[in-house]
Length: 228
Image (cartoon, rainbow, N blue to C red; front, side, top):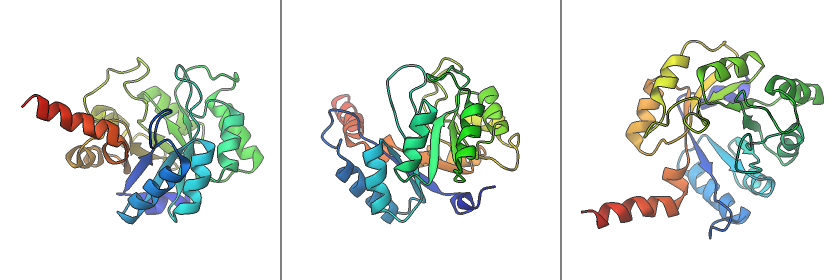
């Protein structure tokens, strides 16, 4: 296990992202949100986009998991080797990228991308955002240090569950090599769901929308009030 990951066991990681066109879509705002969740006990922060990564890295003392979303279909989470290199250069402590078996825009496989990054000299943890058991096992075999369930239910490999894919966590628990850890991410909307993900075998749990996306949270409450 990578030394940086030891302190993450049994902890909460918070994803701090806003989408284009939203009032909070500003690196300074995301840096402030990141500092706030770190004050609340987040063990690491996940940030999206080069400017956000730079701002967040300067604002917090916890590890920053960096991604770069480019596009909206197919592989778009840190989709190419050059995207990966840019995320690392922006200051990410942990690089996260699409870990599915789908074709990548630059024609490289996940394994080839990881190998190239290691040849570059990047020694930090690499997180694979996966969607299925085969993809997760392949990503771990290719050298990913963190296997995330981030894309489960979004690629057609598995049905989308209402909450986190606890079944996928259960299927993967105990099957990864000692060099990789299993992290729950995706649709963790309540403390009870976060605890259930941990109990299902997650090394750590990522929560995003339910903590850092007020537009969505407001919609949940608005619908509840309107339907009462």
